[in-house]
Image 1: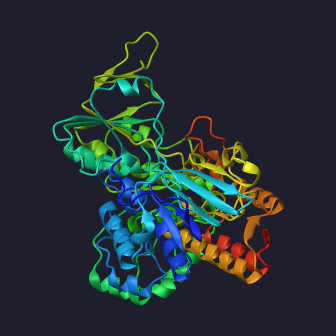
Image 2: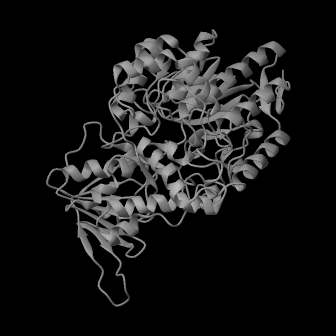
Image 3: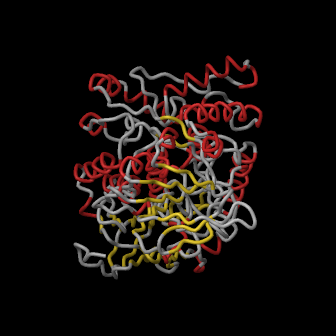
Length: 556
């Protein structure tokens, strides 16, 4: 780690401390500043951007349309910033985050290259005491975690991984200077969203690319394209209405790619009400539009197994029509989970990449990795008595996902009232009220925490809503003359039960997804996000406030 630009804080006092300088931390800091409060932000990276600072792998781009994946709090910012493509690339999104930080002079209150190690609540002082790996010590009555839902990379437990003598890369910790794979034999382990974006790019550069797949994922075409300036100007002229619809989830919070805003939801109420030809026509129309909107084919996709199977079958047929080798096509067709129960991937030429002569798919369900050795990967034999295969590699890319939603919080030593450890309270899965507060942890807020729509939504929509609600809560504290606010245990238990009830009414728990923590060995299998959507969630939150902040306890 390089030497931080600023000397460590020593017993510094602030009105609020924020952990993380991604999109959540930046907007939180802006709102705190605008309210006249002092704040310090601690960030592990050397610049702003959060996930868009770290994830620099080839092909990295957002799966929400750029005109929707942006801040709505400043009309001036909306007007002055122009996006170049329908789906912005990582460099462009990072540049946008840097522009926001500079435009609102946010960096002066951010300390970079600081990993927060501990946050303890001092009941006598009624303040959170925070310390970092660079020796910072600071305290504030309010602590806000803006640590992100996908910010702790997961390294797979594969025998011999450290024995590999070639170059090894983690997709979510990509070298800033980039990587040249020209003439190399490259292996990619994983076929999640990052891999699906990176594989077509890697295939164009590497001499040979081997993709090691355990579980195939559903992916739909992005149909990415440059944004015409005239179209963008027309869209911006209608920004207030677009934003309103995005917040309600009615205009697809991921974007709608049309100048005139309009409410739209599922194409039909039930996939089962249409003939095969009629339903295929609906699916084809959405497939040609591109993006996550594909899942709006019918309202019953995520609740009815038969309807879901029809949509999955359409994608299977698309895969088989694209990939020439039947065995490879079959291996790429997901069958272990219903479509939409893992976050759907959005790609550019992913399936077509497997038609290239220099690309091979290894189905780990048939021939698992036995061991990684210095020169490559050893596969187990497909049949007893056969000899396993050795695949020689020069470079290995791990695209194996994240310890999602709770990972960043659990790696910090967070202790609330009575020195209760957050990791102990969450030993059987995360428990929050609205994904915003945790009973027994006074004045601690979690932006897009478990129990909120978070990763099931356009993150910018959810981030802004949570930050605004936190500021309203702080305002309510002032109005009441309170110094402490916390979630009541009963409200938290009721919310956890409701989140589970919503999830269990869908097909979501049927997937071994990172939504469930199923990708992390030993992690409790609990469906973590709130599945009813940003519109319903916003209505719930507004009802809580109108009912005198129901479930929140204010005291002095």
